[in-house]
Image (tube, rainbow over all chains, first blue to last red; front, side, top):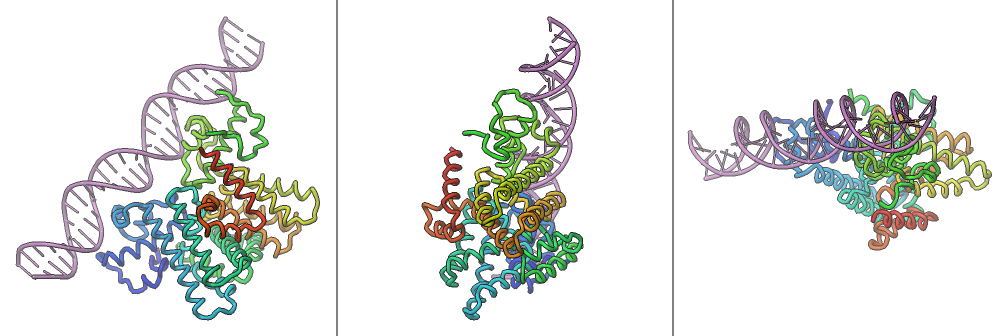
Length: 214
Length: 214
DNA sequence: GATATTAGTTATCCAACGATTACTTAGTCG
DNA sequence: CGACTAAGTAATCGTTGGATAACTAATATC
């Protein structure tokens, strides 16, 4: 692996020095970052605590003991993803109330660099049937909804459009459609229509991530 | 369980008589229907062949032997879901080319009665990282895209809006947001804004499914 | 420098899951 | 009826996965 540093709360991770033995709090951030990537790729059930551990450079039992259960680890990944999403939106809101739609859109796309963050959420969003995860997923989604509605002052139609666009972006990214951009003309066309304005950012991102994967 | 008859390709299932020993082809449909529901609830990795077997009233080894592997079973569920979606759209298209957007929208909502059909797809759509499932998922999504674009004659913007709306609907259903419609005012408000025109159908559906679950 | 605390590991357990094998029984047909 | 085929099960196997326990070593503290 190239690095495990670029994920959830990159800001938390930037200053962490790798060392066989580090502060539990720092290690926690590394594990959460690894977990976010892993859950983003294969979802809650498709991700093993061992994969997370390996990605974080730590033993599997350590991961479990630090978070109690895999479920609690996932819940914390979700919590942080929602918090980060809201923090990014709030920062944008604080910078002015003009053109919020497009600006939030860009901020959302920027979050894709935090590998797995939005995808972990997306996985959670289709797990409504799970008693524990589903409950938290609904609550997280509603937090975002009410932020847009009440804090950002979006009207019903703006919220609807914004959310729908977000879910479509998540889907295209989750599908890894951009992997086929150069080889499959239909995929390229689909991406162009589905992600107007956002395409270049997403493609750039896909390239970076495929490079990382080597 | 109330009945296992209402899912993928209901039309295939309607005429099947339950019997301890039935034609393999009929049993196949029952298993596919059960699998569709199960995969829709918990996704590919979250669903066990045993759960599918139990729901279909058959032994676990039988499910595996009939489809080879769990993966192939899931692929077949996906294939059929896409085929059915396209069939429904084509039927609508054959009935006239006026107001296609709203009419496709209604047809899409109607498909929600086929429990798990759209949700299985949605789970697949965020599994792009999986070499096998991801490949098939992209291909399925692109089939729908190119149908809308080429057969139905949607322009880029119409396709974009339609797909985005579809993904939002999938998300709200996957979240089971309607479970909280009566108890959580915020959830109710969110549903109203996220699913304009479609709300009553979705709520109705949720009620039926919660009733079924008893 | 001894002691206590914190960060981690190795070894192991048990349950669950997908898959395989070998067997049984119900229809079918000459 | 009796042989054959088709539909299904029971038993079991090998892995994997999450969790637990018991141990080890580094760092901080007095």
